[in-house]
Amino acid sequence: MSRRFPPHPERRPAVVAGASSGIGAATAVALGAAGFPVAVGARRLDRCEKVAAQIREAGGEAVAHTLDVTSEVSVTEFARAVTDELGDVDVVIANAGTIVPAPILRADTAAIAAEIDVSILGAHRLLRAFVPGMVERAHGDFVVVSSDVVPNPRPGVAGYVSGKWGLEGLATVARMELEGTGVRVCMVRPGPTFTEIASEWDPEQVIAVVESWKAFGLARHTGFLLDVHMAQAILNVVSMPKGSYLSVVEVQPEAPVERSEKSGKPS
Image (cartoon, rainbow, N blue to C red; front, top):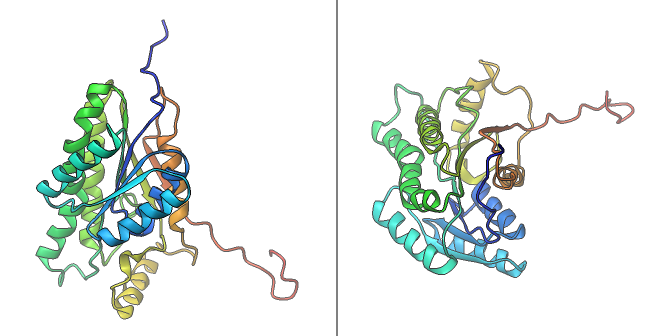
């Protein structure tokens, strides 16, 4: 006997955390263009409002609210406001994250704790706020934006690596416990990506960190992903037909095409 699945709701309000720039902003725009009502959330409300305005100008539906995933109060208030405006949330993208580069012997413990708070505890706060409703409705997607540092840890960013490892542990347990509820849990792993996350780094820090990656074969070429590439991957995940799901999706940048100096053609 074939198993029956709940009907796919026509309206699927989506929350994107960490949506003021980079992957989060691009994902919000992509979801809006695909017909998802979108709630854009991050600490920089002015940036979120610009993203929401862009979605509305393109014909989509979007709202923006302040969201600090390290604050239980902020997450609760955000969830209440979003639900009041858009209705029951069916998609959550836990994208908030931060990186503080430092050699591990000089890394500030409080800074590492802050990174872990955003990556792991922030995702759990979002899960607690939105997923119980998904379980009641037997439908929903909870997507965490992880990193390829999980299968391939990189030196110089111990807090970031630890946070993403823990995030995938949390998401894996959530997927196990939510199996059979109608709620799908997915981990999306970006490879090297151009975003604003490292915009405040000292240029010398960037060089030192990347050079340390090369020593372990973790920077094979100069290609980088763009935020729109990751947005497309996330859209693909939440658009999977009911009865299937993508558990782990890793996206890597394509290497630049090597061309002959004489002909200009691929060598």
